[in-house]
Amino acid sequence: MITRRGNFVSKRTFTVLISIILGYLFLPHIALCTPLLPIPNISIGVEAANNPKDVALSLQVLFALTVLTLAPSILIMMTSFTRIIIVLSFVRSALATQQMPPNQVLVGLALFLTFYTMSPYLDQVNNNALQPYLAGSISQDAALTAGLQPMRDFMLKQTRENDLALFVNLSNGPRPNSPEDIPTTTIIPAFIISELKTAFQIGFLIYIPFIVIDMVVASTLMSMGMMMVPPVMISLPFKILLFILVDGWHLIVRSLITSFN
Image 1 (cartoon, rainbow, N blue to C red):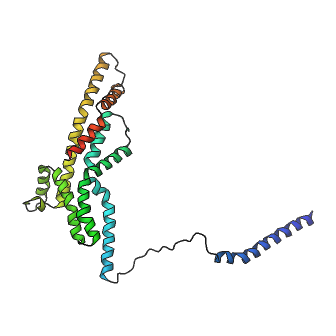
Image 2 (tube, rainbow, N blue to C red):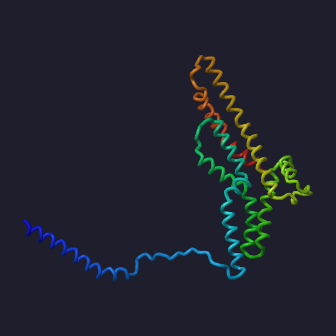
C-alpha cells in the first residue's frame, strides 16, 4: 500500500516537472508569434503648445466640446421643442391615459416635429455659416454671427413684445433702436417664457372638450345613484372615441405646425 502511494506521488511529481519544462520551451515562441488581431496602441496626453496654431486648434476643440455639451439645452430652449412637448403632454393628461403614449414616443415625435419646423432656419445656418466656414471663405467669428442670425429671427418672430420688454428693462442697458441691437442673451429668456405661455394656452383649449365629457359622465352617474363608480373609468373610452373620431393627432400636429407660421 505504501509503495503504491509512493509510486502515485512520484508519477504526479514527474508530470508536473514535464509540464514546467514544456512551458519554458514553448512559451517564448508563443510570445514572439504575431497575434491574429493586432491591438492598437492608444495614448492620451497633454503637451505644451509649440506655436500659436496649436493653441488655436486646442481652443477650437474646447469650443466644439462645449457646444456638444450644451447641444440639448440649445435644442430645447432655442427651437420649437418646448412648445411641442408641452402641448403633447397636455394631450396625454387631458385624455387621462396615464403613460399612453409613452414618454419615449412623445419625445421622439416632438423631436421630429422640431426638425420639421426648424428645417428652413437650419438650412440657412448650413448655407450661410457652416458650408462657407468649412470651405474656408469666412472666419470662425463670421460663421458664428451668420449661423446665429436665423435663430434670432425665429425667436424674435415667436416672442411677445411684453416679454421682450421685460428682459430689456431688467438688463438696465440702453434702449435698443432695432431688433439687431437686442442681445441674444436677452432674446433667449424672453422667447422661453413666450413659448411657455403659448403652450399653456393651447393646452387649455385642448382640455375643454374632455372636461365637458367628464362633467357629463359624472352627472349621469350621480343621477343613477352610482356614487362608488369612478367617473374616469367611464369617461375614458368616450374620450378616446371622441379623439379618434375627430382625428385628434392630425388636428394637434397641424395646429402646432401652423402656430409657428
